[in-house]
Length: 295
Image 1 (cartoon, helix red, strand yellow):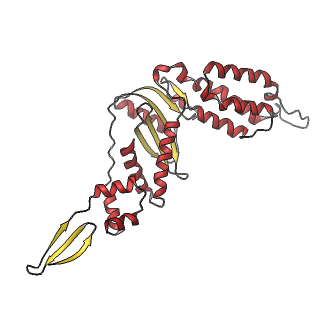
Image 2 (cartoon, rainbow, N blue to C red):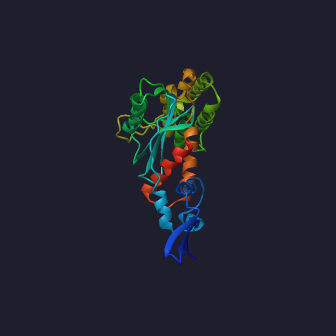
């Protein structure tokens, strides 16, 4: 009797007396291969070496990943939703249960739109979910589209908006104080923040509303002297009701930021980065399987 070859942990033999072939040893477990690929940091080549097969065999094993959307059993939810991107045209839109850290719905998109977020919310409603509140990143028009559900704008996203207008190191005192004020929004209460914000405006309203006086200009209304400072101020003022929904409706269990969802995106991107270079379809399979196992 001679051993004819090795396929992973599968020993193949041929009997010289009877001329028959048979297999012995331990067969390769495809579910274990998939687990190593999803949970570990091994490339296809490393997995092929580990199991004693070629890369094509590993790819065939990974093709057995089939995503089946499961409907969570807890129907009373407060949700967070946002979109993350790999490149310009490959995005992942996610709706997550903020209280149980469970991904309820996700979709691959080229660009995030209000219609797609509404699609996810309607899917939840159609499947029996009662939505008590939603945390969003501040997309224009989305709060109105989600009415009458209470909507909380992520306070961290508001900080980023102000930083984008003022930079991290503004040069004038009014901008510096507004930046310092918005930076503490997540560590203070509504009354203190709104009071400090109104005091800031009373102190600097002349600077905020100052216009350029140029007789040579043909514009009927002179432009503002500091448009970015004014835009930062108006952004906070416009979003103020949405920044404190969690404070006004404590019964909803709304968090004040989308940081928990951002942590999911960060974890997912770290895992996907290990397998960079995979095709878009295989990336989708990987993400589907990872979300199913962890969230």
